[in-house]
Image: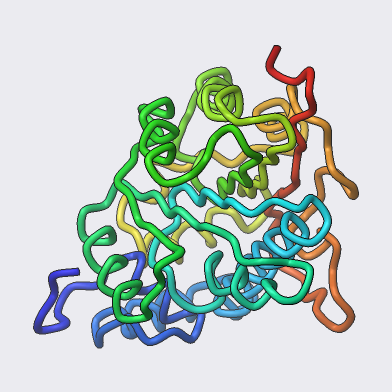
Length: 272
């Protein structure tokens, strides 16, 4: 990610900073501090960690309970602290062999820096590919160069469909990807919802990602369910707020605003 003097913040690096990672610069830390100060309730890092913790629980569930060994994380940002491949590695023990992970993002800066980070780790089981949700078929075609699509895949869409303003179009993009996956595959997702402090929250997020307010659609649970789950079998507990998805003891920190999440399983008849 090109920013040798650390003068320009980048959303992916700012999020890494909020999560307590190390792939960020001085400008990113400054932007994170300003956003945290403007965040309703004051705990923006806690909100970021709550989202990341839910992602981790979903990855573990896919591996342990659904026996999925291939993970496709679209719109992933930087693969840093407690991200999909690190959770998959920790989960891989005993009866749970390792998983192949493919990250996808459309930002060239993110792509370049992510590949550097993975190479430094020696993450041979993890790939980072270019892809854009404007062309979901191309994402699956690219993933097929690494993953075996005749076997189940765990597809993760965390915080990416809020950029698609039309509900029917958003649902079609989800369907275009899940239709190309084998039975036994599952979709895990998260999507921001409307709430009283949305304007203040969006002002804070604007400090991380200029243009956030102009390109973000907040949807309630009925609309979210219609986009992500019409062709899939919901996995318990169904559509819930982030902290409520199979919380672990002592880990159910509340968020000041709803982010809806869930998991759907592609059965033998789904998509047919």
